[in-house]
Length: 368
Image (cartoon, rainbow, N blue to C red; front, side, top):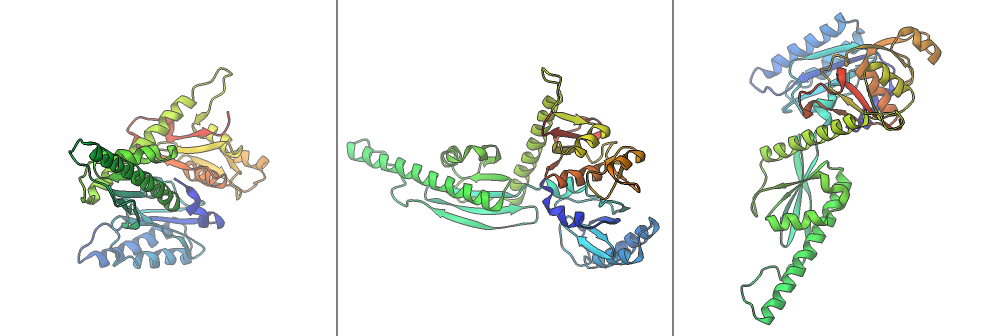
């Protein structure tokens, strides 16, 4: 997950109200129920020590969702009487979650927003392709590419002239596949899509896949649908879920290999709060791996105003230049540090039930 969209949160000091609300239920009573939920969230924040203006800002933001038809939910982050960020969610957050803390509680976003692969579906035939951009929150056209229109069909004759014709057909197919692959690569770069789903005949899908740049090969999924068929939402969701699982599993495999010492005794991955805090202070985190339900995720650490002012013990912040530190959750503090150094973060929940990294927090390092 690219953390750049969290930038507005880290431009404000806090403390923060962080609320996750389910909007998946839609009945006649939904507006009334959401009004009650908004009031309950404001009361809970007040009970945790939030100021009145921030409680009111959150209540108002949640009230505005009374008639929302969003299929999953919404996160609301507010401070100083103002809602700073309220991203829609790509997965249902379940029960109402309300936090008042020094840092915004962003860790749940890794499962609820982060790994929502944006997909380009390419409907391929011998004459060209139509592209469709699909995400958890809808779809839209993403362009069309038209190749050579003639000749595109084979014959069954075996005389010389027909063999010559078939060679032209082969050349047309190859030309069109190359045109489609080039356009698809451009589309992926412009949309920053995580996944490319190829739909069409086996030969046509394979021809396009073989001509895509090497950097895109691990993003491609082929859908076994015939010409003219459109992918259903469940088909796309299945491909997206498989991509998320595969990526989490691949990153865990990298992590397991990197935490084994090399010939000089150096490791390329660490786990556990003390080691991660040290790596974060030294800007060595290349990618942060989190299991949001891990026991170390909510472990208390101490922070200052600067992301580098991060310590396991309160007394350790004084040498870092912070004499009045605040307690914070380890996952949220590490996410702030990762954001500050441009490191991505990944939830490895989708990789399966294995308890890796230990405690639920780990990182691949930029250098040993």
